[in-house]
Length: 221
Ligand SMILES: Nc1ncnc2c1ncn2[C@@H]1O[C@H](COP(=O)(O)OP(=O)(O)OP(=O)(O)O)[C@@H](O)[C@H]1O
Ligand SMILES: O=P(O)(O)OC[C@H]1O[C@H](OP(=O)(O)OP(=O)(O)O)[C@H](O)[C@@H]1O
Image 1: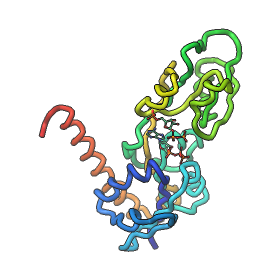
Image 2: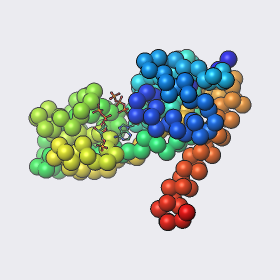
Image 3: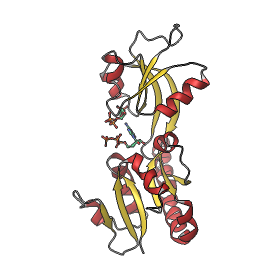
């Protein structure tokens, strides 16, 4: 039986694929998958299930997959119950509170906040002791303060381009985000050897990549 891995399709998939390859997993079929959603590796050791991020945790919780590869933003927002095994150190970004240049959180009144992440937003404002109204948005969150739907947004940013190009400013920095390898606790017992071998292989690749980045930064060849 192959190890079933729910892989977040899109951005995460693109960034994780080179890590999987470097860990010795044959990704040739994964690379030429087109619209196929379930891909077995040619050696029969792994089955990749391509899913949207929030659904990766749903599949894990239901025991439909053994392992998941998903952003920590989603794990936090969904109150993840699964075992987190490795930070893959890709898909790195950060939550921010952002708005137009005339926003002032300290002004009295209940602010309206647009976000894809209502739980994370709720927790953040609770720590500030502020009561806010949260409006859930599915994407292009930056629109909310621009068209008067919300006073500000809580969203993730990487390069800052989306904020800049839409004349939005960061008012606070929240948690850092990266892609994580998580496992279903039952699978962890049943397939301990396979899962920990995968974790060890990927951990080695992540460490190597980190070392290379540091060496490049310090000018070492
Ligand atoms: N700008 C970004 N830079 C780096 N990582 C990001 C960025 N945006 C999102 N991520 C990470 O990648 C994961 C998937 O994001 P992605 O944008 O591919 O999915 P999505 O939001 O469901 O988009 P879509 O609806 O366009 O498929 C997020 O859960 C987060 O962990
Ligand atoms: O700081 P940047 O590098 O510009 O990245 C930030 C953008 O990336 C994410 O959006 P995504 O691409 O997932 O699109 P979405 O609006 O559909 O969520 C996030 O929600 C920001 O909009």
